[in-house]
Image (cartoon, rainbow, N blue to C red; front, side):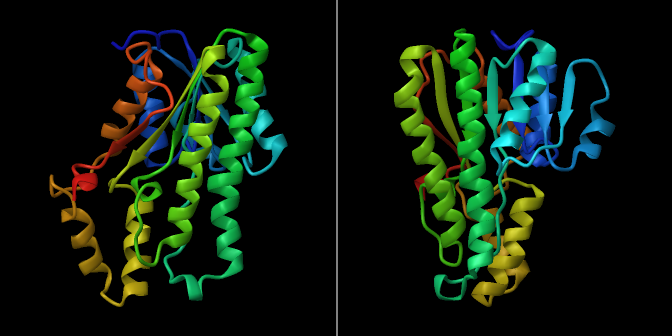
Length: 256
């Protein structure tokens, strides 16, 4: 068991998807209580119909939706930790071909949503004055560049920047802030990108999938459970000096 998670209340956004769902499972296994947030709340309620999970349907692109996540934690006495994981991949296209509508969709969820949720969480933690921890999910795409995914990459660069700036603001007040940058993980999101990137690059889905799978030093996809394990460790008391850090988990992708 990881130190410091037993009995803690953790907010997980994007909780119905691959990494979010795996994070909920891991945190529950560590003895935490979870506020699980996703628009697909019925899926969450089917999976977590017990007394240590509060399932919330919230639009995190609105201040009211972000605040609702914090309010839901009052059932457990308030938030101790937050895994701000919600995000979308959008579509792959060259910058010259990308639509304004799709741009707004990606940035509203990945950037505006991350900001508003972080803002609500920080205000809550400062008011409680008990410290806490916040972990953002960005992506290795937030540290690198790729053809046809400029908007997604730009949104994840923004999340990395947000996390680093927030860390400089609240560290002295006992709130640790870090950002997780997964590589190619076997989830719905990556398989959606394979289709979209293959079409935009003119190479086909099978070719793009093979490139994704074998493009790192380990030659495979990561799993949502592997990412969740690192997320739980960062949020736990096992990593008290980790603050303002960017953790890449990409099977050697950053070495290539």
